[in-house]
Every structure is written in structure tokens, then in C-alpha cells.
Image (cartoon, rainbow, N blue to C red):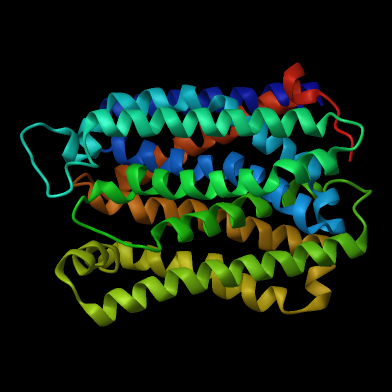
Length: 349
């Protein structure tokens, strides 16, 4: 166990070393690649917190089956400040509204002072919520404690993730606007966090067949929700054909990025959807592990598809840095989840 943890941490260190080596060789590709990797990784701790609070209100065997991986995923939020440092250093390259020589109609919202204040507010709310969740998980009856904070916690989480998605991703193109963008991000984070927790829960022999079937049905529901929201946004933009919205989709549906969009659709909807329709698949450990890996890969591809087309750098360069950064972030998270005492504290379920 310890050897595996050390190996995972070593893989994370190698991933970061390769990331920053490639960044020196291809500096123009680093900002968008790092942002895409960070937005992917961030879906795990925020999504895990959301699922923990959701289960506190809804109940069900599925939540107890994945409570430990969800708790570990939520604790990964502690790494966020570290991962934000490179993003802060390249933010002026990513966001044109941070450059003083450019002015936009929505400058009252998109300006350095307001963005910094909102960012600090997001961190304060997320860390406070994570602290509350952690304290209640350590109680003799965690369900009661989680249920008490779940309504307000889910509202705060939904609001902050929505505004963060606008600030972090949508504002790369300050002329683009979408009222459903935040909802798509929330659904995508929930899908990623659920897939990751299912993948790790499948390694536990104690996972009951009924709980696995519930997880399969829940995963199918979240897959459909994400696909519905993403498709409706595309349909509305297509029908309206407004210049600002169409200009955002244009480069993302053409050439190699259009191919990536098709891959995202296949990995996050079509293949999981038809697999999960079968009750046999839902109760099969190998099949659920395969479907979980597909949706995780789809989440990575989707974040790259959202961010990378805004860059003028070569797509291969961006993709290489993106993959290296993902390995660094996720391997480091997994390694720390195994060896650090903060991540090893037992939870009552």
C-alpha cells in the first residue's frame, strides 16, 4: 500500500516536471492547457461535496457505498490554492478583460478587482463548507449533521460554481453569454465525481449488488441530465444564430476540435447511455468500471474542448501539456489521499 502511494506521488512529480518542461518549450500553449486541466480536476472535490450533501437529503444505499471516496475527494480541495498559483501567473494571457488596453461592455463585472473579490469569496465558501462537511462526517451520526447543512450548502455550492464557471471558463471569450453554462458545469462536475467515486468503490469487496445497481441507475440519470443541458444550449444557439454565441461554437465544431466534440459526445453520453440501459451492466463490476472510465475520459476531453480552441497555440502542444498536468494533479491527489494523516482519518458511515 505504501509502495503504491509513493509510486503515485512519484508519478505526480514526474507529471508536473514534464508539464513545466513543456511550458518552457511551448510557453504559448501552457496557459490554456493548465486552465483545462485545473477545471477538470476541480470538478472532483466540488462534485464530491455536492454528492455528499445530496445523499444527506435523499438517502439510499448508493451514498453509503461511495461515502469514503466522496469524502476523500472533497478533502482534495486543500490542494486548490497550490494549483491556482500557475493560473494566477498566466491569467492576463487567458482573459483579455484583465488587460487594461482592452475595454468591454460588461467591464463592471469583468475587471481585476471584482474578479479577485469573487475568487476569494468562492474559496471562503468552499473551504468553510468542506470544513463543516468534514466535522459532521466525524460525528457518531453523520447523516443528521449532513442533512442539517445540506439545503444551505447545496444552494451556496450551486451559486458559487455557476459564477466560478463564468469567471474561470466562459469569460475567456467575454462576448459570449449563456444562461445555462453554469448548470452544464454543475452536471458535468457531478458526473465526474460520481464516476470517480464509483471507480474506486468497485475495488471494495463490501460493495453490495443492490448498491451497485443504484449507482448504475444514478449514473445513467446524471449522464442524461448533462447531455440534455449541453444539447439544449447548442440547439438554442443554433436556432438563434446570434453572432457572439455562434462565434463561440464555430471553432469548437470545426476541424480537429469538431472531432473532439464528437468524442466528448460519445464518451459522456452515447456509449454510457446504451451500456447503462441494461440492468446486467448496472450490476456488473467490470462493466461499471469500464463505463466510469469512459465518463472520466469524457470529462477530461470536454474541458480541453471548452478551453483550448480559444488559444492560438498548436493543438498538439496544448494537448501534451494538458495530459501531463492532469497526471500531475490527479496522481498527487491520489498519493496524498493514501499517505497523509489528514486523508487517512476514518469516517463513520
